Image (tube, rainbow over all chains, first blue to last red; front, side, top):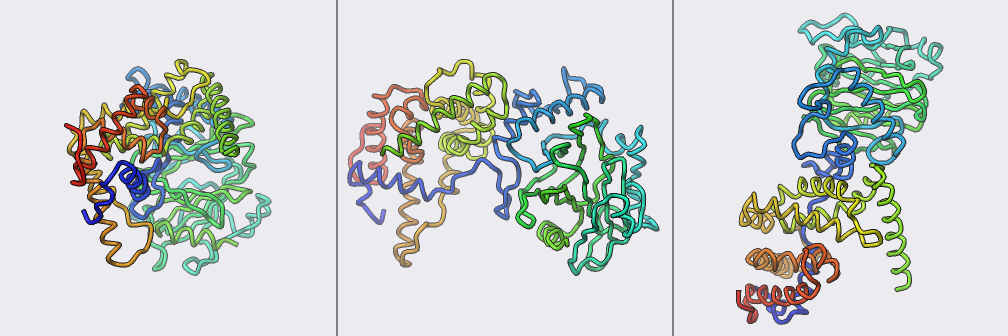
Length: 297
Length: 195
């Protein structure tokens, strides 16, 4: 040892140990990605989710399986709605105004292919095909196609679009009145906009209308997902990457369950700007997607 | 000093309120408790079991602590009670994983960059000193390392250390003294107690 004074007496050793404690790279309660960003919820959030779902065991049994058998979809939805309401009442932890996020594999009955049936607002969600559809986004169950000029008159929401140079004007615009005038802007893939998992689609920007205190969203992420906390123009948001995403929300006022009902086409950025919740899906990667989001005017 | 007391009382009172709510099934209140102590809990587990198991051990311990809330003695401090559950869970994981593997991981991975920016010679010496100290700690018995970690890494009081490790307070004193002697011996700087 280069400095024997440490080992000379107890006081010296105690001081050395206390000093060493500040030099140790202690693990934290939130998983950290290679980039140094938070890669998932902290332990408190994971404990809350497990307790809320009744999961007291270390085994990672899916939360919708009770007594070894999958429960009926209607029961799952009712439990999900009650759980989400309880979480909103708690109003702490991981989430945005109008958005709650939990982890777990989505029940098979709620996967987009199954969820796309049985509801007029859900439509069809066909698997990707090698052909490029004539209108980008037309196979994504985004609602009714409209023109840019119609957006404000139909929804009362002014058009706000990214000014990032990688994007021009959107190539198609969609409104879904069944989902609180959800607006979706779709851009074709291009040299500057890599293709998502949907042929011909480079980026989707969605805006969810409605007041955040009247409804909330709950997101169920598959185990292959990663969640990172990010900021968009100072507003907290989440970058969700990995495998299947699944999204649904429940209205607080009517208790109606609203199923997103479509597959996601890329990694997603979700944030709330104080008025509405936005979601961008793209293949640009986290930082470039945040740049696009921050260019919205 | 007066301010410190006020601050401690505020935390203590708030703990009591959160505990009462959590006992009645308020999961959000319990989440707030976990968030308050999760970092020290992770460090506690990291001292005891392999780093790869520490996160799971803490999560599992907090789940068990929630179920054990009805047995929590009203008015007692929350932190050592929780840390004792964490320490027990971490020990269980250590038994499964094997001690030497875990220690090697900690010794190799735990060295961070120096916080200060001394001259080149000092930098090397500081890093070497940290390495040797960590290596010497790794040679200690589990109970010696735990008591030193609780007292000097986690900065727990003797009473908190006693509750966290599940030993009498007097044992904390004697074990700390003995562990320091053994550490000094491992560093080659003095006589240590018999092992």
